Length: 281
Length: 301
Image (cartoon, rainbow over all chains, first blue to last red; front, top):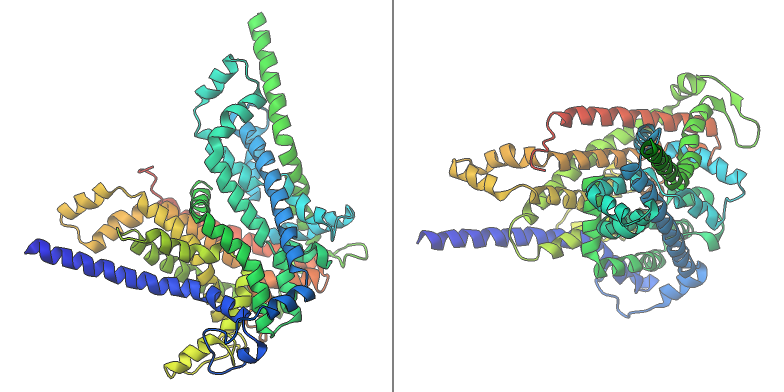
């Protein structure tokens, strides 16, 4: 009897949780759904009141119009190119520096490391103007270099994160490899890096997402349409077509869809990567 | 004798490799972070329009210009209101969702994935979408409200509501991030503690305040630090929804720095403003460390 009421209570509780979570999910998914549905509607349908959920006729003409007005596909490729370049550079150079901080002894190491930690607190706005001036002096403003070079050598956060992971690998592995005649670079590349795969994957996702979604820096250094990233491109598109929501939703779709596809196909790594980065960082 | 020589040679090789491996990363840090930090500090004592040579003005950017800059004070106030709205509500919402997802129910991964989705999408795309939903005349939100006989509003175009609306969008975007961190924290609490407490007769509230909260303080500390950093530096959202308007109602400090630097080309004054943001952020982070410092409990690690 008691076990019967108990299981009924448990059932009621889990039903309630499901109900709350389903409402939550609608709250988080619906805006994207509404964007998708709007992007297939004609301008007349946009102005219809009351609004209809589904388009009367599914039309791709908004997409055609958007893509002839602004080279959004080119901008997607720009984002991909810039994000891949910066992420690759960050993984290589931050992991090398992290290995050095975690394993090698040299003068001034502690001082350098506390300097790294100190810079992590400085807001981007502080370094933005001088970095812009430096890029101008180097003649890199309004080129891919401006988007890639400042992040290419890795950053304090990435180095710090990977150092924390290197510290968790037992030093006996290094020593065994040394006895077998492995040099410092060999220990780094052949022994330790393969063990760092989860950490590297986390940093990969974190950096890639950061660069892909970055807006302020591209806004400051890029004017030419063909060099713009998708985030910047969408913002300038919005500046031109402020209230043409059928076109805006099509443009937003183009910017969101690749990310959503990547997310759905690997959401576990996404979420675990971010969690891991958060817990260690 | 020869052994110590060999050791010396080895440690010299070790430092050489140490410097070599760190060099590219350090170079990038020096050129794009360290030098800019100090340059920015110097620039904050100048008047510079990027074209003419910078003119040294001492502290007057801070003591004169900033003090008399109405917009600065308004933007500071807006930043604080935005932070006070987004940080507690954002963390509380994330905590409730994390608690629900920590129960043994089916479909947790699916729910988690849906709520986390906006975290990976750029703020600009999200702003574009929400501008459409919140549109005064054609937006779906006002339509839904009219269905239940509620008066709609110009959520982003009315000075009364705009700051609240952008705060809501910000919470909506970041709640998934806070949730996965807190959920990971909750998963780390050993279940035998709850069993023991239940046997000892502790109710749900006591289990929450005596076991759950103390043991997830590292996660709470992390999300609160990240939330403060994020809300002090909110920019993309403001840029693409309201541009600081209507009036001054959503002009936040980061947006004001940007306008001074890249619209009015007041590089010196913009640097001074940026340093004020930095100092405030630093102070608040220290306060948080103090607050959480004696509460952070790592025993279970």
